[in-house]
Length: 133
Image 1 (cartoon, rainbow, N blue to C red):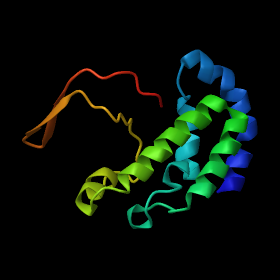
Image 2: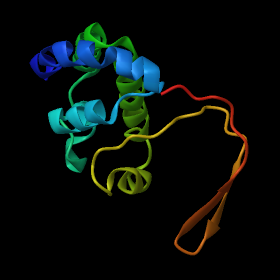
Image 3: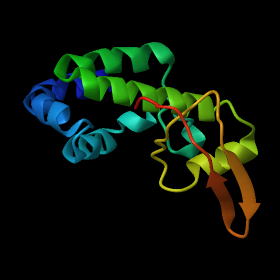
Image 4: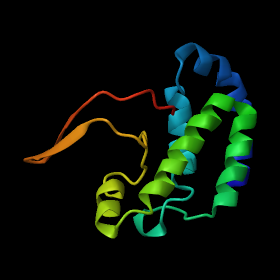
């Protein structure tokens, strides 16, 4: 996995200016991360992840960041969020990881909104502060 991350450095360097101009990670980079399995580095094996340890995740993020610091930042945050989701009760994990297996979501520790159960899901309302990633 670390070698996969290292192999991405040249292409990430080529896309770094695009990342800056777009103010987000380019779609091509997200696709490359999906294909390489980077969003599954610490995801539990029972949900299709690799379940590597945190030092492996950090080493991968260092390599990615050598190519593009912004892409490394976003990937490290989404990976950390995956780790958080893996700490939840098994029923909650089933909901998080059941769709396509590549979990990516923002995480805010001081939520100010409300989630009200409705048929087929939840009605989410509120105003949130900035969340990086």
